Length: 354
Ligand SMILES: *Cc1c(COP(=O)(O)O)cnc(C)c1O
Image (cartoon, rainbow, N blue to C red; front, side):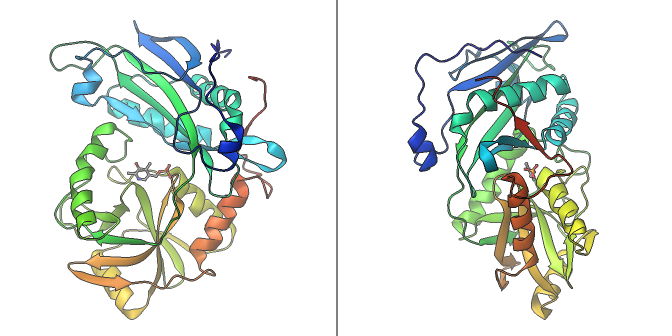
């Protein structure tokens, strides 16, 4: 798919600022936009990054008919630019869209939009380690309408920019026993906007008590751990990597899947099974649980050093030879092109859009 490009006449890029990471968490020069109307996607184009007109009564603004993705592009060895696992993000994007009664985005449009945009703004992709180009595809119901209905008009957009996570201290997290992120039959598996608004208040309460994040538990009994904040959750228990299975309440993280695949390849024992809060508490006390970490695109792998359960803070040792750091290093090496990539997880953008 050839996407028409309207290039900016006032580039904001200062290349040295990208390299020195002074330019971080800001949008790059261009964005992709396409419109859905009369049952089809049309007018796909790339244009300068700017605000978009939106009717005050757009359905997405009131009823949260909004779905997004979060993915990354990397500056790899030999100055190649690669996007991590576009297809896997695309499959999840469409699962989220179906759940929210929104039109699917064809694979070709999704991949071409992202790869062309990243290619065009390739000078904005910062060098690693840790730094990357964050990519945010989203669809929003743009139809103007007084009153509730499933929209028939949408915008699909992709924006992105250089992103360097702040220095990541190991996390202090609290097991959430009152509030719920996702319930059976709900939308927890979808990256839909409303999930994140609903998580803000319990997260703020945990932060006011000195924690970075909550660990969400099942909606019915608050007895089984599910995710941490907006990351999947994994432990090392008795030497095995243990993570709860994906379900309609646990989002199918691309990083989670990548981490499990790499762990198996490296010969680590892996268990996808439920973990109860009781097992976690006992395991932290007896020392059976040796590692806990969050897994997601933003931080890759985020070590956890304190888990608070019903008012009791239980700590974990953090050491550089732990499994989570081996997994993180392997994922980092893949993303920055330091080791072979036989699964072709990196989509190299080839400079054609420049
Ligand atoms: C995005 C997200 C994740 C992580 O998914 P990745 O594809 O690894 O980035 C996990 N949980 C929730 C709730 C999320 O929104």
